[in-house]
Picture 1 (cartoon, rainbow over the protein chains, first blue to last red):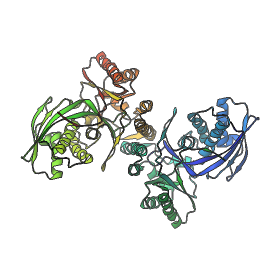
Picture 2: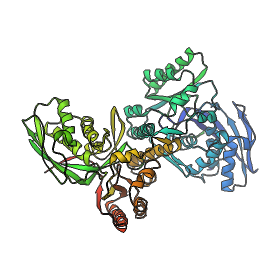
Picture 3: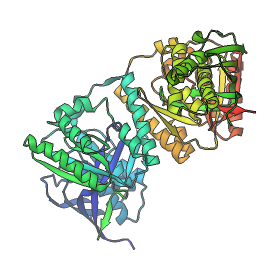
Picture 4: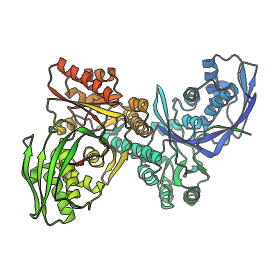
Length: 309
Length: 309
């Protein structure tokens, strides 16, 4: 039976994952927004409530609104939706805050309409929301939110999303230092060209990481979590990055890097206990430099967005 | 029982495979050299016979000799070997002629000595032969010859070779146009920097290709066999390349590109019959421009070098 109203969980996501700049992403489970969506006979989308953050209620200024309207337009749907957004993911944290809202919106609408759209279609609609948020219609956060698990965006145009195996003992630790880095700024500092030698290292590592994920070879995953291109440039914007990374690896993390465009830093570990130790070690480094932060530990969320009871 | 003499098959190999420049390689089965190796009580390596090609018999000028001496030195082995090399793979063809000799040599020695060395060690010794042949100690041809199947060289130093799944219906078609391109020349024309945008495409494709190979998803393998970096530059050195590639794809190949540094062109197909059709279509294009060539069709050789009866 198709429901008239649903409450959903919209996970935070980690994009890039060291060697997978602009292509890889994964969904978290312990941190995410909640949204309530209701079918109404009035055309369009009305945002009735936003809690947790001060974000625009106007449909065309809100990433969820814009993503939802892209779907309504494509389906030529004549009625509409009311939504509530309960933000738990802080905007600008680098763990896919805008993606959670955009992806949650269209995924929830699809549920209420009986599932007319495929995951690739939903991803394209959600990318319209991302375009509003950051100026570019990227899929590396919305894809893992919608597909669940770990995703690789082979191409954005035409969109080609590939679901990658998530080894079951793979956990993420995330720390969000309370500083502001705009996605647009952290893009601007990147060079538009790279050395061929660094490129070869990067695709060698990404190919090996994908192999490690399919083979559930944690040692190979660990060796492959290297980024010689983006991290050396962007990490300059994050106070204490080098020490935090050292601490994560010393505590036994498989790898550590910048989540999306930062400032959040993620580490991957084998097992939840190890991920908790790693998170503590990272947190300790931020305490040393008296930088407030949030800390999360999560298994990889293989389902993506889900309906809450 | 350890034998005193063996005859072995040393396969030709395809390096790069479109999006895997400098990291990917695969072993062929229908084309390869033969070598005979004998344990003798005299120290060092003596090349007693080379047939099929005019190559140096002096140990220190021959890739097999150099690779073998690297192994003898590492093992501090006090006796030696006599070898015969029966070349079927033409030097300079772009399908791993030097790699077959270097890899065959050390693999065969390892058999005669009862297997003291691991595949990574054998690969390192064989790379010394490659260094003599092309000036750089690369592993992208010797690794698939030694490991068999499809290999990814995540890093050359320290060496890290990963075996990738070979889907069982995957076949290669190879045409070798009779023109000369030196590996060193085809390296020189490459730019030392690339755009970040092209890099992202390349690692997106390589990640997707690895996923496609593990999932045996031929459509995904096909979509991923793209190279926006090396092929546009190197293909200029191969007469008729664009038409040959078009013909291969029109005949139903999954993908088509330059084998190693060329001039050979490879295509991958699902099934042996399709690969034969594709080879014919490629051959026809070379006939049109009256360019002599050899044509090969082969399943992926998952064993690598093997002992012949």
